[in-house]
Image 1 (tube, rainbow, N blue to C red):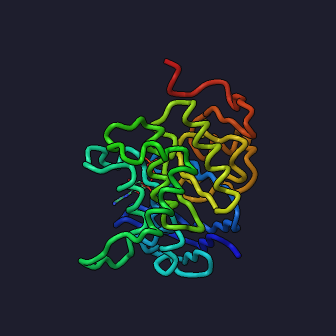
Image 2: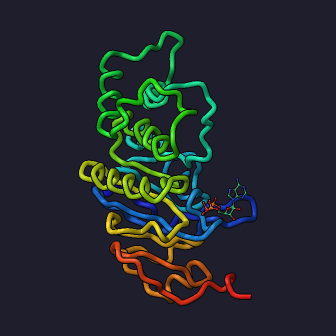
Image 3: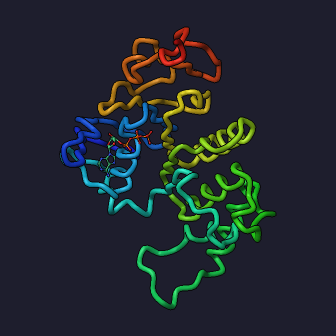
Length: 254
Ligand SMILES: Nc1ncnc2c1ncn2[C@@H]1O[C@H](COP(=O)(O)OP(=O)(O)OP(=O)(O)O)[C@@H](O)[C@H]1O
């Protein structure tokens, strides 16, 4: 079964066309990186997959269901910078939020199974010892793991991550990719980024999005494609081997 099927999807915001005729199939078990420039439509595609936006044209199915029906199957890790870290909550509180039911009653409380499941997830992500720490006292890499734990607490089949390594140092970046690779043994993983430098051997396929889907396939990109998608030369890392695709970036030269 396919995890995601986007069929000729177009999304308009009034007179701005954010996505045009995007057809994309993501098989179950894939590790897909969606790359593209600022404003290229990556967040719009994520929101459409999450069912937060309805396409103006075309259709989306997630494990054969509509995005709304499949919402419990999707774990979402938002952009780190969009999460309020001053919120007075512990690591355990935030991770437990992933167990909240979609319809919350006034008498809701977490079960012992909820707590045990989430504590196990925190252990798995190597942050079990931080469970009582306030989130305002965490490093960027630790906070990113907490957000991944919250998504995993919902027991999803598909994990979507928006810029998962944007706010972390290069060591944490590697650790987070290692962790995602591990999780990919059981889950379909889709990450969105505009940083082509994060493409590493961990990612199986990439989709290049700039309003339209310019490419979907193996992680080897050629320079013409990168230039067409990004409008300028960029450095990329493919198969974990850093190499410069083109020699300079247009904005860097006076
Ligand atoms: N709510 C909105 N109303 C109007 N236009 C929007 C809205 N959200 C996004 N857009 C426009 O749609 C286009 C795609 O935006 P989107 O946020 O999906 O791109 P992105 O690839 O995620 O960008 P970034 O890398 O900068 O986060 C842009 O031109 C953006 O200005």
